[in-house]
Image (tube, rainbow, N blue to C red; front, top):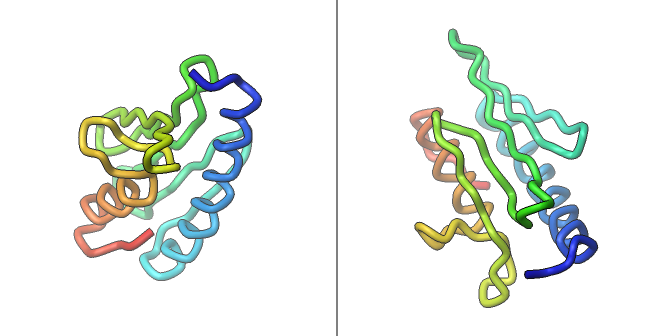
Length: 110
């Protein structure tokens, strides 16, 4: 398992890149992205006030995404050089594209 410093570095890089990509996708598809307290939140303008939360979980060296009534837990993959959802093999951007597309009912590319 990577040490905390290495995890934080990789997580910060992933969050910075994801934040930019989500902001662009949000402009195109009508959702808001907020960052703060070390996490990202995606807010949708729907009747349910739906919100996705993306947060680092330092003790277990994972990124967790709470979305679509599910908790997605991504760990670092040296082979992919990215945070990956082990169950599907999707990296962070691929997973976000899929769950945003499911939420909005239209193709979203992150």
